[in-house]
Image (cartoon, rainbow, N blue to C red):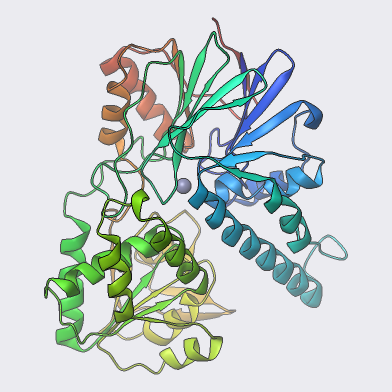
Length: 453
Ligand SMILES: [Zn+2]
């Protein structure tokens, strides 16, 4: 077999790994590049593969950096199938429809303001492309073996978010394991990632290859912050990713309420319509979660789900105490920006940055102590208390990555580290080589390797 790294190599976004066996190919993940402009521009380039030879796409999970390029692959002639777990299929629909909507809005905005170099500015894809993509999905359960041409494929649980999978691919002679995004061993909602089975090659994520997460449990942090917010009659604003982080936060807050560890009266506002739709998918698949789902569904009545833009605006008049969860997680856009304007200036309030903040984002500015940020064209002062924590992360940290890989029964012939910034991947590479004595490679974008039998 042969493998090409068409995305997710040297960066955390754009995951696309092409596996070739003679004249047949499958693609693991088909994600969008995000973040820095030089990466985003890659989304406009034609994908470097022969579509007629592509027998299937295997989707590990529904984050945009893993599924967001699918409509473009379809536009380039791909006719399916796309295999993934049933919840991933449902969440991918929500994520892709939202992505198309945002791209159309941004193109319209650029045309109105005339700031695009392209005249007229066009969306990367539109809702029609998404509608042509959705019928190509074929849901498969964990541990169910499927045959695609000469490949045998199996999905196993990887933790991380609802439906997230690791993928095994075999051609009868060689076996590969794609870790997908690996979750944590003690995630509040998700089962831990399944230990790797014996394979020839492992293609493994390395997002936090150079970091060890804080040891204070997320539940403890939330408890302290919410009680503090109650005493000070303040606003606790939590920018959150609509998929994964938002559901984990909701669950933990509801647990605190259920066990009377925070006042039951404190209102919790959940201001992400896409996040609310995803909550419904979470409640629909109880066996994918390690929690008592009927309790979770029942407790949801304690949350005030904000739907319309009007309701969202009214929230800005809140006096506190109140907790507001709103997207986006790195304050790059979305409704949370209006709340930042309304509540960021008051030193009595608190902003909890509950996730990774990429360089250049507003979230990163706040995390690094900037006292002014630009929102909708104007600078605003930030006096609110800023708390940054990685206890809420949905990704395994360095120790967890190492212990996952160390559980493999027999050393593989090789390990490829993907889905990481170069420094993170390189630090993990050294540790795997030293401690586990494995042969490790950090592939660069668009590199290919023949896998020795
Ligand atoms: Zn992910």
